[in-house]
Structure formats: C-alpha cells, structure tokens
Length: 384
Ligand code: GLA
Image (cartoon, rainbow, N blue to C red; front, side):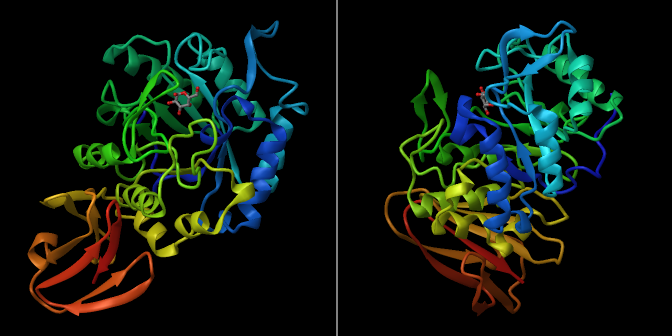
C-alpha cells in the first residue's frame, strides 16, 4: 500500500467522461469526435485533458481464452489500443472503467480476481486513468478498502502511471482511506443527475445539486493535492438529455453546480456532448478565473462559513492570499446578502471584490458588501 504521488492530480483532474450522455451507447467514433470537439471548442486549452470511457465498453459475460477483457468489436472496431494512440496523438490522456466485483453496474465483466491481468492489459493499451466502480460488491468498509487496495497495487505494479479514480459513492467513507490505497479521487455520493433536487431515476435514488452542496460542506476537511473528493461528473450542458437526463436545470442552477465543483476542488469531468456545445455551456466550462479557483495549488476545499435564511456564504483560501467567496441562494425568492469582512476571515481594511463569473472588479469595501442573489444562483467573488 503506497500513498498516491503528488505528481498526478496535484490539482483536481479535468476531462470528459462518456457516461452522463452516452451510457451504453459509447463507441469509437463518439470518443474520436469528442477528442476533436474538446480541441475545436477550446476546452482542451482550458485544461480538460482526460478522456474517459465509462461502463459498457467490453463484451458482456465473456473474457477471451487467456482470461482477458474483450473490447466490443462492434463499438470499437479498431480496438482500444488504436483509439488510445489517437487520443494520445491529440495530446490527451485516456481513461477506462471497471468494477471491484465480478460485474460492473451495467452487468459487464468486472475485475475482481483479475486485478493484475486487467491492469497489465490496460497498461499495454496505453491507458492512463482507471475509474473503478463498486456495484455488486459487499457493503463493508474493510472489504471495500481491500478490493480498492488490490487494484491500486496492481496498477502500481504495471510500472505505468495511472490516475486511480474510486467510485464507491462515499458509503464506506473513502475520504478516510482512498489516498492511502493509491487513489487520486473518490466519489462522495451516489450519481448526481441533471436536476436541482433528488429524484428517483432508473431505479436509483439520484442526487440533485442542492444535496451536493451539503455533502461538499460535510467533507470539506478531506481532499487536497494528490487526492480529491469527487462530487461526480459534471451535468452542466445536459439540459435534460442523455443517459442520466433528469429534469434539466436553469442557467443559474448550472452556474451554482459549476461554482460548487470549483470551490470544493472537485475533479471537473465534463458529461455533456461537446460535439454540440452551446454558448451557455461553453461560458460555464471555460471561465479561466473560475477554473483558477478549482485548480489553485493550495488545494483547500471551500467550506460554509455562514447561513442567513436560505442563503449561504462559503470561503476558499487561495495561493495569492486572496479568498474566493461564494454566496449561494438555495431558496425560491431573490435575496440581498451582506458579506461581512469578519465572516470571511478578513480585517476591516480596504479590499477589492471581483466578480469571477463576469470577470469584473465590482467594489472596493472595508466592512461589508451586499449582493443580490437570484433563486438558486451563486455569486462568485474573489476578495483581495
Ligand atoms: C455507477 C456509477 C456511474 C457510472 C455507472 C455505469 O452508477 O456511479 O458513475 O459509472 O455506474 O454503469
């Protein structure tokens, strides 16, 4: 059991994952076109550089004569190695998915008992990232730790550098042990759907963004350079479409979602179809100043410092001694919220407030600053 190195994931990983939009419909052309799309939209230049194939890439109920996993030849006619070469030639890193049991969540072969064999296969294909799920595995902390450690060790033994992403949904508290067993990020909740509130979806109780806010606050003391709380793949841009389509959300709700993920130092794995990126989604995914908050090298997840009715003030200290502040309105009416210097750990001395979403300096103040916040909106400030 070796701790993960700080070289990988020294800041929260960024990229794209196939599940939220494509589910079992993932295939080679989707992945190639996504790589091209991440480049043509500019997303890659903003740091989204992992491309991850989620569940449903292999053949169901079958390994080959050597016991190796088989990529579905209908979905991936040229095999995974050729696809990895393409992804790498475009400057991305490439991720794949498996599960710590005999079957994945969608019923494809898992890697339990085949850890070294599968890790070697992925290393030979040129894989750089593994998302390791926990469906069909015992709900017991010691078992989860042991199964994740086995795969962590198998990845390490290949000699290839893997980013190891644990998808245990937080039931067995991976924030306490994930990094020790070689993990670089660990899911902290069930699947986040494209919805503000929790919903029942595909037989699962799925998490809405409003609930992620509380989970992020509860776990703010965990996660930092080398190992991060993973709030789940991004739902921004889904707009009611795709594998995990919920009811969809309004622009300000997606903005709150993105603000929270940036403040909480969550990995930013895009889930929408970047081949058809609309301007709202491009705006939310490619704001340099917001991404700088997420990627700040101090790597301290934000915490809630004050609740005023349905509104909350959160702070995140940044490397340059400034503070990122979010003002969230979880209620259904517009509110005026006053941020006081002492609430955000600052003295009553002159300060500059910059609005990060609009990238504009908005005020000089000493003692307090009042902001109007729409229902479900987050105002993001940087106070220097
Ligand atoms: C689980 C995971 C999801 C996704 C699916 C695939 O639900 O939490 O992120 O990987 O499995 O089947």
